[in-house]
Length: 113
Length: 116
Image (cartoon, rainbow over all chains, first blue to last red):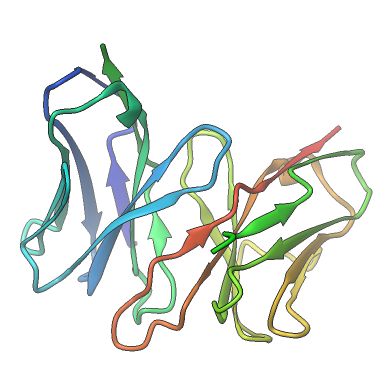
């Protein structure tokens, strides 16, 4: 069956370091992948989209890579700050087409001052 | 851009009661989605609309759940005869039509449903 895997354990890193979160998927070749941020009690907020023909995408301190051979996306936050502490979700269209995405379970990031 | 708004933010009700949630999407967005999220999980797709047409429903959406978007603007999600397992955060999102490349979804802050 099609599945998305994100590290369910929280990631704790020191302020200023680079945080790297992983999203793995199985049994599908999605046309794109999205990353969202979610704070407690709030809805997810879109951060970045990367398409299958793009290896890397950047936005300010954020960088996303997409390896369709490994079926993996990496999400990096450089020079991390305590304000980056949140849960980060990856989402991709597992069922075909562009109409809807399936979300992973998310990884909780805690940046320690 | 006033964002996606959901009402109410919290709903506490007794098992067996009916509840209705409302979502007001971003005005120019023609696509509207409903999700359910439980603690420690990502949002699970329930259904989506293109304008007023309901195009897809998840198998998660039992017969007790119904969603409408009568004029292609706001949407309602109704749960009849609520059960303990319905306790969750219900999220609404909207987006522009995908076309050749997907548009990101803009989420509201959800309605948290607690069944006593």
